[in-house]
Length: 217
Image (cartoon, rainbow, N blue to C red; front, side, top):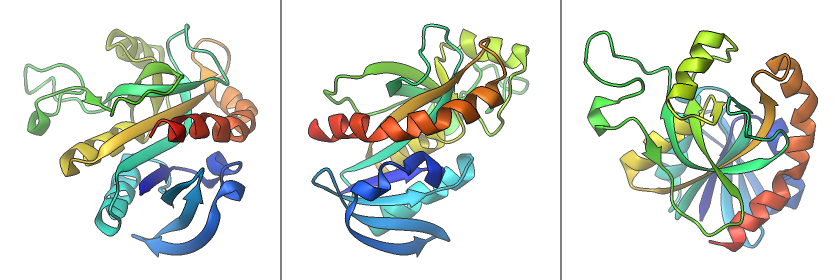
């Protein structure tokens, strides 16, 4: 079974009609849809926005289902100008750029002592999609000093959930796949306006990318 974590229901608007044999329930106060998607047994949870919501939703799936994979998909903003809007990327590794203990320890931005690392890797799969590095934060921001700092970390795209999901999966020894669709690019206009404009297009095209991934599993 594949446990799917999505922050917002509108990000999955084109995926939901494709789920067969649907059954709905609540876990940890979150809506879950069980069923089959592209021939795979799935349990999809709508986590809500943010790292805590994403982590507790991921843990709820892990605790209640025998998962082969956790699969997170959703929209992101790009900070790397080589990334293209309305395109889809598999995340190869991710970090939390709002986790910062540099003032008390001589460690890099995003370093988490319990795991002795900055980056959390995802599981390798043979899908024909481009790869990107993800940065996660609980703040949607366009402040130039923050953007420059995360670019220096090697971040291509940013969201508010992915790295928390990755940390949860690593803690439970569960394989993880992250797919992100780009709605906005830093430096190409107002990020919020870009997000609103492009979210529908990105959401509508998720099924094609997801089917490609599921074929490789």
